[in-house]
Image 1 (spheres, helix red, strand yellow):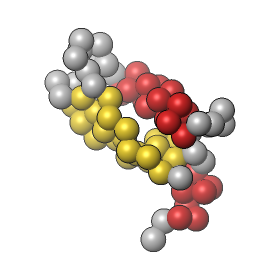
Image 2 (tube, helix red, strand yellow):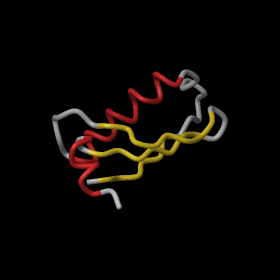
Image 3 (cartoon, one colour):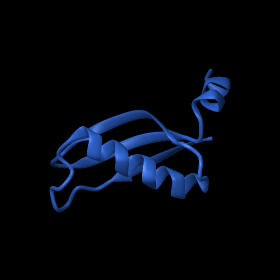
Image 4 (tube, helix red, strand yellow):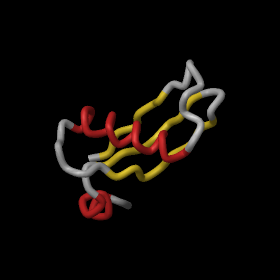
Length: 67
């Protein structure tokens, strides 16, 4: 299952890409309602405006659903 998530950066704390990936994975687990690893397939944005990410519950399932 895929989900788009949006990560705001109002306070400017998310400047490093590793921090953004960690937040995306954490929010992805909550949105997908899983305790397993969550893969970030797409990440786009900037520190000024925020980030958008596509998360999937596992890469194996994501490969099966790609067109």
